[in-house]
Length: 219
Image (cartoon, rainbow, N blue to C red; front, side, top):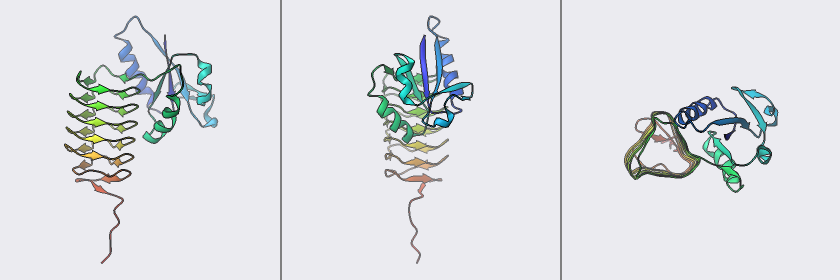
């Protein structure tokens, strides 16, 4: 039986369970179990959330046995902090969680620890790193590059030859136009249309997207 541990308490656990259910329904010889959450907040330890218990902090992972599958849907920065540390621990597995409705080109190159939710589309010659989260109906155009620890929320479209660097957050329904680079730690607001490169750490919103970090000069 494959055993899964979820990093960070959150309601999205219900969709992780649904993705796993759908995937394992096609593998009748295999089964899985979600053991529960791991969370750094000691006030949550031992309590139940959304049908699953908070087992403790990351320091108890060794007590849960070998070959644990680790899944995390927390924010990009949080995923980076925790999973960068856990990646160096032997006996932990970081599988790609892929809903059967996702369409991923065989010409795409994908790392590990990613989540591909329902109806995600990944076009040919896309490169996707590690620990990214592509939510419902996200589409990634041809020749795009997605770094590590990035989140694209539902309905976002990343057009061909664009680049999302590490720990980027893309809001629901946002559109990244062809050939645009979004720098590390940048945030793209919901339904924004990004036509120009976004510097690292910037936040852009609107149609067309404009920076929230630009200071206006009074005349």
